Image (tube, rainbow, N blue to C red; front, top):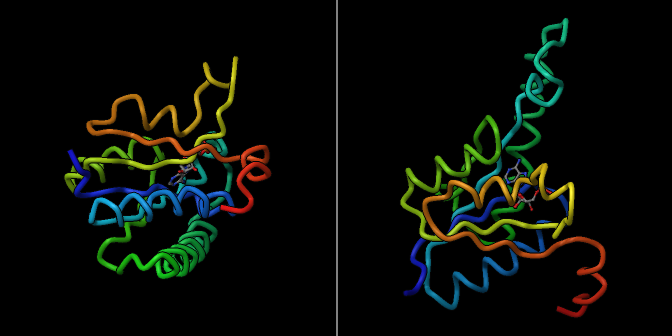
Length: 152
Ligand code: AMP
């Protein structure tokens, strides 16, 4: 079965370019619709929920910056505005929601291929894999991979 609708999850770091390259190539070869999602994590989640100050203006700035970065990134891989999703929450759950609501049949994420304890504790890629209602492709990222595939 060919994939028809592919959701690329990006954390907007340098590494996501490699992940995007795979997703773009896959979408092209399957003639699929490519969507991009970035999830902004609430500061209260990142800092444990108990920060004794009003963070709303900081959160607004983070949102503005993320919107600009996502727009630039998505434009660079020719994903049109209506297929860009900027949402707020916990990355794993929000990626699952978008994948379900938008009837995606593949989610593409980056994976650092962590071992041992880190795997037990779980990365975003792990979180996305568990509980996804469609296929998940984890593209290896990280320094060792960057050296191996520099000419890609
Ligand atoms: P991590 O486990 O945080 O190293 O992230 C692994 C992969 O999960 C990234 O390469 C992205 O594909 C995805 N990811 C992580 N954080 C986010 C985010 N905030 N929004 C969307 N995707 C994310």
